[in-house]
Image (cartoon, rainbow, N blue to C red; front, side, top):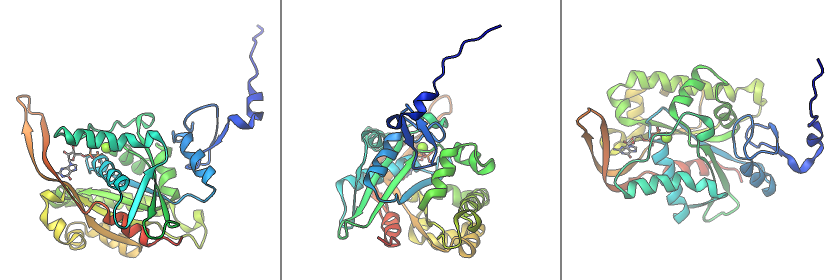
Length: 303
Ligand SMILES: Nc1nc2c(ncn2[C@@H]2O[C@H](COP(=O)(O)OP(=O)(O)O)[C@@H](O)[C@H]2O)c(=O)[nH]1
Ligand SMILES: [Mg+2]
């Protein structure tokens, strides 16, 4: 039997249709997102046009750790600008996380849970500059990741190429832990933290990245500290007392690290409906410790 097939390989010769992904290096043709890691190609185009190597900072943490709320609020503060740093979105799609978070908080609710399918993640690319030294910059480039996906990727590396590529290419990371969960079930959180730390260390290990490669700066952030005063008071001591495994790992392997505590709301309440479903209602916004981790990351910059 004869079969006819249309040859399409000539499109690979057309350079205008070719896009190199700055996150994973994969080459895609004629699409809006990288076919390997789903990073929007607009993001790669912006970084490549700028002509300076990217300085990626990404956000990791388990499901429910508070990544979406923290990231959304941080980006909103950066847009308004602080005394030390300011940031602006590089593309219109980057504004989605900020918009969803602030929109939900204004209506006295928290944003919806992030789906675990990679093609539904909202990608963010904000260029952050030091207000006094504008040449010093960082790229907050991160998909607003679902925590379940991060957990799966840590247990089975390469399930989600976006997480792997961003972790490998980041010069700094913000790793979030729910301070209430750490206080009340510290052992479980410590085990997850150890797995995550080993995953980061492995992707930055010397044979893969060369002898002179520096381990990324890691800001370990305890979220929801409005519910956990002990984390707010002294985050490093809180880590030492509740996450001994992570503490040891950080001291021996991830040398460039620091602990922080953040919260977005001043007070909130948990409502339970007649079916037993719980929902947390934020009463008023009282951000605390939001930009400090990023300021610390920026201090380590060499530009
Ligand atoms: N009390 C308090 N709760 C928070 C705060 N940030 C987040 N939460 C709660 O944590 C839940 C999960 O947050 P989210 O950002 O969606 O977590 P993600 O899964 O890591 O993206 C929210 O729905 C809120 O109930 C905070 O600053 N204070
Ligand atoms: Mg989320």
